[in-house]
Amino acid sequence: MRTRTALSEKWQFLADPDDKGLRRGYDRMPLPEPEDVLIPHSWNVGNGTDEYRGIGWYQYSLHAAEEDIGRSFRLTFDGVYRDAALWLNGVPVGKHDGSGFTTFTVDVTKAVRAGANLLSVRVDNRYSPYALPFFDQFDWADDGGIFRPVYLTVTDRNAIDYTMIDAQPVLAEHAGRVDEGPAELSFRVKMLEGAAAEAEVSFELLDEGKVIASGSAADGTAAQIAHVRYWHFDAPELYTIRLITKVGGRETDRVEKRIGFRSFVTEGPDFVLNGEKVHLVGTEWMPGSDPRIGNAERPEDIARFLQILKNTNCVFTRVHWQQDDSFYDWCDAHGMMVQEEIPLWGSPKEPVSDTMERAKAQYQEMLRSHYDHPSIVTWGVGNELDGQSGVTKRYVAEAVAYCRSFDPNRPVSYVSNTPWITPDDANTRSDIPMCNEYIGTWHQGMDNEEKVAEFRKYNAGKPMFISEFGLCEPAFPGGDSRRERIFLEKIDIYRRHDVTGFIYFCLNDYRTQMGEDGRGRYRQRIHGSADCFGNPKPSYRAVTRECAPLRVCSLSESDGKIRLELEARGDLPRYAVKGYYAMQTAVGAAPSVVAIPNLLPGERTVISLVPAPGRGRRIRICRPNGDVVLELPDAGQARE
Image (cartoon, rainbow, N blue to C red; front, side, top):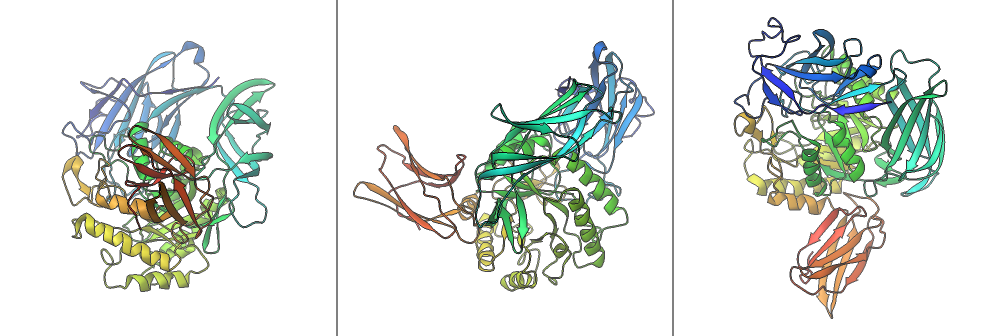
């Protein structure tokens, strides 16, 4: 009934620097002497077009079976940078302007015919005043092309277009983390335009293939679920939900997706995850930075960098611009909480007249494509405008209200770099005042501790979150040793002033048109604790150690025993340690595992291990899902 096919091979590409493609009929005739390419594809990596900003044409021969004519044909593009116009057999079928990172779908049903169909896509990655972000006001790669996957979906006309499913734990009054219990599923189901009014949608909730609940999934309904395991970054429990559409008793559509039950809210100055007050830390990865592939990252490329990110003990991150499903699928499965943001950044330093309209349009596309991902815990409505301006304050207040009107279960933030001027900043109009803090580098003439304390005191009733800090070289000297020193000095300040969390900026040196280093596809900012290929620098180890929820108080070996004293951090990060374990390995010896007792923040424990025979002994502290928290290279050497 529903088929979804990835259109990755046999595409053709041709650059059009003179913008003569329409006059030459590229919308309806085969391209002359094109290059064969695979999707994802970007023209800004290799082939002498690294710095080309202009027009590019793509074509694909789309086959439609005779028996499918009369059904619904839709093309979904996970990302085209930036403006796209589409034709099928010379017939205009859609446009997508002003947003280069959001997923969009084009209905081509009326233009499709049996057999071969010529799909033409005109892509423009020139700077624009009609897009978010505006002109060249962004600090990331702007690689032109169809840089994310493309899918063809063929369905009955009585089929689901998209869903917005709320999977919320039902939590009683308590203090502390809850891992399982009752839950509620609420459904918003959008059918394809023209679907029969009598179409009925039901659901089945599956746990490892077994149906554990079922019922109506009609738009606006809710279902009570007796018992589930809740999603948590240390235990990312996922379920399959199956949605079944019927008309007159005949099944016309079936959709399956993965969901997780979790609650993430703000409560006064705290984050509350599944009932537990938590302080969260993480790092940000800047995608598109490997110069070998640029923004044309495959799921395996994304997974590789996300694992490097997760290995820094990152449990909460942000993305300055929208990512695709493969990014969030990985975060769902591996326990990474994410803030997805509308890429409104930099100049103009105040929102202009059509900013809100464009922000709303992008948010709607974010909702349609990503709402059901449990890893997305917050939305962001902008980054580094003039937060002291009344215009920006009004924009943030309106944008936050708009987002919450569609999603009452996720907090909404605004990221500011101006709260150090006065603490009455636009970010205080959001649920989570997020602060980019570069005092001592980009922000001069201020006392770091004084300014953090002032903002924390002024906004005592809300979480205070440091959304960026770090060192950008060569804009500022000192290299990686200074980067590590800044990291350690600043988090000490954040810990002293009860900051709710931070996201360190950033994991990697990253490709950007603002880059001070390199040229072409190698133009980048040296801002990371890893290079643009993901190779760690010395500061990476400091980030990993300080973001760990456990601190090693002592490690010693005597009388045939290894004694390890651990403390659950009580400041940053701060959350319960449950289900963790220590694993000892050595060359030629079987691994040994010792459970770490559950610890609340600030509590200590001592565990003992029998030294493993052999060379290269290692003790690794692991999360319940197997991620390594800390690695101790020599079990016989005491460490503080």
